[in-house]
Image (cartoon, helix red, strand yellow):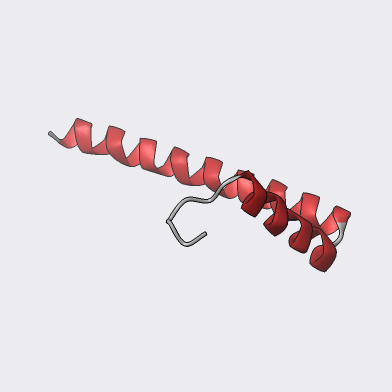
Length: 56
């Protein structure tokens, strides 16, 4: 369990606990927000790389 890998049983347990704590609607909103945050982060990194290439 402490080997450094998270398997399917661990992910299901985390999801079940999150579902109990937040509820289905709140969990969907959290997932949507997390997805948008990751998308914005990737976009910012890509823009930064393009600007760095222009300066070189």
